[in-house]
Image (tube, helix red, strand yellow):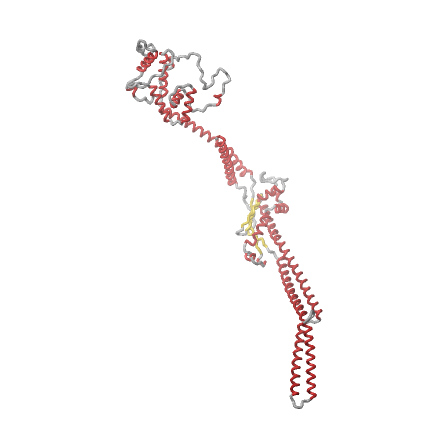
Length: 571
């Protein structure tokens, strides 16, 4: 039987049947009106989406509600063997199978289960909870807002997530508004459309981020680079550089010996002098001398020089010295021994003038470096000569005193004379003894001659004894001729030594005077300063590129630091 609303009426209930049996019979009658057979057993069409199945399920539920008079019907029993499942059940199983293929994590499934319990849904599994929440238009994985946990100010608004008991009777939906939707869409098309929307959103975000990045680069890198380029090309005063080279040469006639003699012909002999000259030219003393002689401060204080390179009239010596070190570059190459100098000024002739003045200062410094040494050498040679003269005078006085004490100018000659006299007397005694022996050999010797020979022998022996006594007295005692002779010999040797030392001191003094009067170090100019015709600074293009790289590096460092800090704070 068919009722007034197009629903077939259930068969008459058996006598004594309960209300539950009556409801089961009505549900079976409704199922008989749904497609059966091959259409029901076949797989659902691709156009039959979950929304359509849900609509049909809702329509069927509303029909059952009308039949039961607004009472909630018990869930339909599972299909018996040989029976076909309804379209709603097939759609639900299809949706749950699709949800299983999404690869949801255990945490997401637990969130869906808690969300379903919060909304009071009767679910059979976590996947069923996800399906029912999506059918109700609720995202089970959306993070809850902290504002939802705050109790509303008005007391008549229920708190979200709290099960409130409905005190009023529920209204029955109107029959014409709970019909299933006739519009069906392909899940693949809907997925493609959603992916396209996501891609458009990603492209929009990327475009917005690119625009912001370009804006930041233009503001923090491009604009400062543009300002620097404008300054270098339009504002900066052209500067002219003058280059020169000079080296320090040692005098070959210095007569150095040892390691100094080995290095005298190389650049290592003047290495210390070159470093000292370089340090002096870069010192504040050289800047003050240049300002006093040529006018360094007045040149860079002119009004037509740009404000960045201009020196204020009231600037201190420290500010002027900073500008001096910036515009004067001096380098020393120890392998070649050459000092290279570059002077920058706003006028080429002034730059060449500065270069010539600094070369003169360097030459004066080279001379002054060896002046102290030469003065010390000359002073030492003079003192050595004076000491040698004093020592020779003392030795000579000692010799004179010894000669006066002995009253003999030549003690050795005196001793030799005594020895010679003694020898002559001994020879005469031997001759007289031979004559006496010859006279005594006669049978009748002449007594007068014998006595005369004996008298001569006696006299000669007395003379010999006297000479031997004089010889003994001259060789023994404190004032003997031998001691006086040795002392005189020592005094003579000392005098001879002092004479040699005096001669050497005179030679050294004369040589030192020659070296002191001669120049030991020479400053030779290898490259003379020539004024330049074209400005050397600023290098406009190179400086602009350098400014771009500097600002880009600063921006990159700041960006990396900010991103690292942001990541650390967020984690």
